Image (cartoon, rainbow, N blue to C red):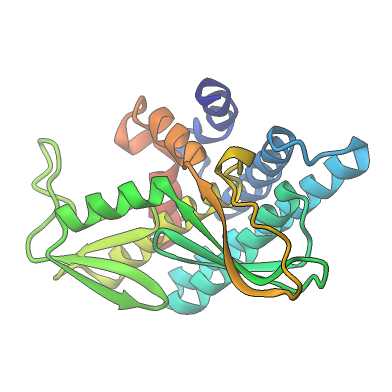
Length: 267
């Protein structure tokens, strides 16, 4: 599974720095999200025929476009609105891959709350937990000095720069999963850069497959539940992405190219 995901992801993230323009970034977001939504739907057995594949591709493409626009909002200083749009856009991919069409999700740390507008569902809202985002949260706590609630996100701050390999003297910001971390003297551009990284990870979480053995199936209730736990997700997609990126030089990683281009300078 990990090798397969790495192979698919490398088709998109192995891009030279000179290719980074807003137009190409938008195209990559749309194309990659569409393909990964279809792959996730296939893994979960939710794609039935060409019509199902088309729905996955269409919803994934729409989610990718929304993710790109959310990054532009962040770049322009509207971090809260960008994070909200990113969550709504992620719902498009999440729903299509899972075979659902009437849910809207919002991620708060290791939990994702999904509100259902489908009367046939057994609850008005569902909560998923992510093992990958739990690990990322532990790492963020270990590296950060303080934790804050900013623009609808859990964010960390550090009194000194984050550790970096030589010859760098340190990073002004660092992101683990959906948790951006900032040096206390970091500029607004760095905050936008790290928030874009969080959105990138949210895009990966959106296409994370759910498995029956890690899904709660409670007994039928006479009335629709208010809220209940649904899935435990492993974080395979972002794990595979991180593994693939670790094999590239820092300045050649597409996630860095995109964040630098959109948050700081883009042709």
